[in-house]
Structures are given as structure tokens and as C-alpha cells.
Image (cartoon, rainbow, N blue to C red; front, side, top):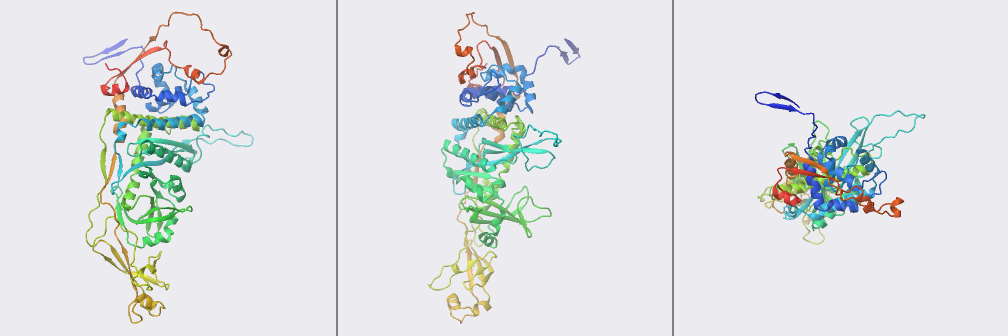
Length: 634
């Protein structure tokens, strides 16, 4: 041992190797203990079965244990994870009730050989574990309260992708076909920013108020988003049934990828809000007629300063399948550069928002604000990328990569649950949208307008306002086929807007229907006038309230506690074997190496009494938290 001494600091070196405990090891200990105490590890051993080949003594639970540790660690690669874990491999596997750590090559072969059956069994168990316990914090009335006082559960469905780069390979008739290791898990997609990129896309499902993941579904290239959406909707249905919530209270938020009429049939009747991408609906007569009437509201956000003018169409047919929904059209002036979102017509940019939210509970501005609030989902995906990065390549096989991403979401949810145990806090309430002010006389309503209406006939056989059809160009057509144009707007005392349309006197003088239309024979000298009334929408005035928890504070509580405290890992000598006995009598099946049963396979790598006993000491753990995990306290 060498030493350097000065007046204040003594620095010593030693040739004796003492590996440092990984900072994430304490969190892995807590999560493994929690999984074992909740019976999750036993369920994985019993239900996730895979007839292995060339895996030696290992079973599915051994490899799942490694994936849990890898997800907790946040290490960039499996190689780095194995290097940090190697000195403490025996203690780590003992946490899961197993003996030896599978080699990295063995794990790679296992993930490559996986099939759909064990992966789907793991996915089902993940969702059952999430819905089966229902922690105390989930029992609080979180959700979105609309202006009518109804509670909605909001779910976000969106896709994310990971790109991989590969170099070009020479091709020719004298060369064999190139074999690429990422062919199964990736395919060309529409990232297209760099040469040689191929991608893998996956659809994720998030409970927006608790920040819990409900599922992940991946496919090569751009993915099979319709199939993935249907599976995501089924997972949401399972969540609602487990919590005894009616399906009518579920609200799905989706991005523009799903904004077509064909996709609406995949939502199985759930309420939704999404951005539309089929701009042909702007050419519908009912939409064009609404665009020529006064706007319902104006909407702006302080982040962009962009002022959108909103037109609310309550019942529009979208797509070839005839799906009916509510359409909100937002317009704003075009800028000097081309807009990435929307379609430009003339000097205006048109954006579409599709929804099934009722008009009596959500204004047009509420619908747009609720969709744009999906930006919170982007920050969740960013946190997932920085802490776990589930899109990194853990396997070059599709099902192996899928199993890894399921385990990553499992660790995310466990961190949330443990964080609520460490720092139990009441639900927070945010005023998502202000209450609607009371209507004033001769002013525009804050909630928009109902469908346009005209007066009924007061005498049978006369031509009434109902006989003047509103046209896509904003005019009215009389029964004789002549056009009436708006000449006046008057604000009524109750907030209604009266639009006065007038015909040309030259059209009325020689009209054959003049007596039925103007009611005073041919003595009148004025053209026919028709009033169209836009009444204010009858909508609740209460504010929109968003009730949720902080996604970061609770998820990182356990991480910060255990990664900033000391961890002692002591590996003791193996337990002394008992007195020597005669070798056991084996059966003919054992001697002939017959196929092992599932229980015999599981017992191959199970911890035995002769395994070296490890002692792990975690510092800074509150006593109540230790009691929850069933850990002894000093």
C-alpha cells in the first residue's frame, strides 16, 4: 500500500480490488423484492412458458430477471450492464430466487428464439398486474371534469419509432444475397433523414392522469397502426372494466395519423379527439355553409401567439364508411413559410379537429385545447427515453424486442407505484379552462352558436324561411331558384345573432311565386327578406378541471432515494452441506434423459440451500417503506 501525506489530506492506494456497487443496484433490490412479495415472479414462472433450445439450465424467469435489471439500470448497452453487474451477479439473481446469471450470449439466443405465445402471455400478465392491485392513489377521483360536471378518463394513444443505420453492401450476380441482422425487427420507414436508415415503430397507450403505461405494440417500418390501435382500445376497455368505469366516460386522444373516417370504426364507440387529415371534408356542403356564417370562437395559446378562428360543425359525415362525428374547423392567416400542419386555401390555413365530445359540455375552444394538451404526452415519452430508452436495441428479433419493451413499461409503472408509497400526496387539481362568463346583452356568446334556424310559417300554403336553403357559398336559394345574400347582422339582447338575407327586386317582380312568398300580392315594392338566427349554445358554465398527479415527482422518488444512498453488498461463504449420504436412486427416465416437466425445468437454476448467502444493506430507507416491502430494519 502506498500513501501520500500532506497537512490536510491523506491519499492512499491499494492493489486489492474492491468493485464499487452500481448506483442502480439498490433500486433493483427494491423492485425485485416488491415483485416477489406481490407474487409476480411466481406468476411469470408459472404462466410464461417457452420450450427452450440451447439454453442449458435456464428458464424464462432467469432472462426476465435480467431484463428487469437492465431496465432499472438505465445502462446504454447490455455489455455495460453485464460489466457493472458481474461482481454482484450471485446476489442479483438470488433476489429473484435463482442461482446463476445467464451469459449475455445466452440471453441473446433466448430473445432471438422467442415466439408470440410467451410474449403475449407476458403482455397479459403485465396488464393483469397493473389492474389487479389498484393502489390507493388510483382510487382517488382523477380525470377531467367537463362544464356539465361529468368525469372523463383520458387516454393517450400515440406512436414512437427508433431508427437504425446500416451501411451499403455490394450486390451482384456472383455474390450471395446479403443477410442483415435487423431485417426481422426493422424495415424502411418515413424518417428518411439519413442514408441507410431503417426504423421500427410502436404504439403506446398512456393513462393521462396517473401516467401509467397500459401497453406497447410494435412492428417493423411504419408499423401496422390500425391493428395496433385496435389492440390499444382493447387494453383501455380492460382498464375501464377493472376500475368499474363506464365506457361512456373514456376519452381517447390521438394524433393526425388516425384522422380519417376509416379509423373511427376501430374505436368501438369510445369518445375521442384527434386531428383530421382528410381535408376533402372541407368541400362538403354542410361545412362550406358553416364556414360562410360567423365564427363560433377564437382560440390562442401564449406559446405561439397564433390566433385560430373556430367553426363548430356538430354532425358531419367523414370517410367512405359514413362515420358521423363533430368537426371543428380552425383557420388562421397563412405565413411566409409553408405550414407543416393543415391545408392552405387562398390566404387561410385550415386545420381539422374530429371529436365525439358533446357540445353541451365542451366548447369548440375546449376541443382544440384538449387536443393540443397532448404535448404533455411528448414530455412523458422524453422522460422514458432519457431514463429507460425502451426503443434501444435489446434484440435483433421482433418478439425479443417486444418482450424488452413490455418489461420497460412494467418498471415504469412500478416506479410510479413505489413513489406514491414513499411520498403519498393528494391529487392535484388544475383549472384546465376558465369558467364561461355570464352572457351580456348584445354581445357574442362565449360558447359559440347552435345550428342556424329560421322562422316557421304562420299560415299554411305560404313560403316560409324554412323553404330557403342555405348554400355552400353562404347564400340562400328561394323556391324559385334565386339567390339571397346577407345584407345585415344584428345582435339580439339574448346574445343571438340575426343575419338578414335579401333578394333582388328585379328577381321578385316577375316571380310566379310572389303572392305566396310576399303575402301582399303584387302591391309590395320591396324584395323578399329572410332572417337566419344563430342562437347561443346551451352549455354549462363551470370550468374544466384536470385532476392528476405529477408524473416525475413520484416516479423519481424511489430512484433518487436509493441512488444517492450507500449500498453494502456482502457475499458470504457457501452454506455448509449436510452430512454425506449415499447417492440418491435415480429412475430409468432420469437415466435415459427423458424430457423434463415444467417444474423440473424451473428447478434447474433455482437457488438452493448450499448457495452462498448474500447480505445487502440499504441505507436511508424509511421504516414504513421497508415494512411495505417486508424488509428488516436496523
